[in-house]
Length: 373
Image: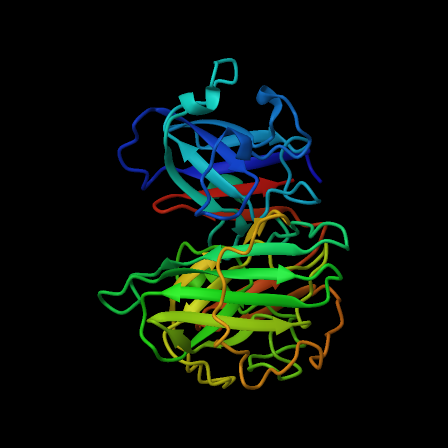
């Protein structure tokens, strides 16, 4: 760790007409972009006073694009990591000395979930001098103690450049890992696209700023390859297809003990891509096409109720009859690999706790980057 600083870079290029020259940046204790936010949802794991809440990241000016925060307050590792949490930009500065400071910050201009950055070609120039060992990473949201259920959610955003004209794809994937951290259940409720089969994949990065920035399917490099469940050497991120519908709503239901779900490797902060076509499991042809909707997997408090129910008529995929017959791959960390992205883009994946950490927030029109040294 260098300088014990978290660097936050804001790119205002596409910010448009701002209501004010300075605005607040606040992290909240959820990764659910549909949740109503208020003063009580500000990220505050140690129950600190108003002025000391680590979720009150600070105030940005249109012309001040780099903010440094002491990493004892704001970190991307450990149980209090910001990974997978929601960050919102407010229309006015946050002045903690004011009465009702949160209300005084005004309305939310934009919000997003913090995800792993795909640093290949995406490192802002102002941060490039800090990154000297390839693709930085190491950020993690620890799952918490064994003995409680771990939950996450991913709310889809349509990619207009790929999605069929006139479509409006919305909906969510909900993840629930059991208290033993062995089995993960995945439920989906998705609206706005046709009734055929569409591939569904977890990708390495949580950068959804473009179709290509999601990176390769989440995998153990050199030991896994693209396939369909329940193939023994498939990528972690190969979830098969969304292909069951009821009343024009697409539903997905799956369970697996194949995911690594621990404090070193898990799905929080990665992205999910919903593809144009059916995934046939072919390793070279990439039959599933491009990503027509994506989302970043965000953290949910263990007490959060399941946001929707999948109808009982929706069954597990025909090739998955139980969570338990699936093999559990060895939980070793990948060191480095160069591979072809499942959507045709060459990317690199490096995981090392000694590397600097680089993550990205993809707002509607702007990009915010965090670097933890």
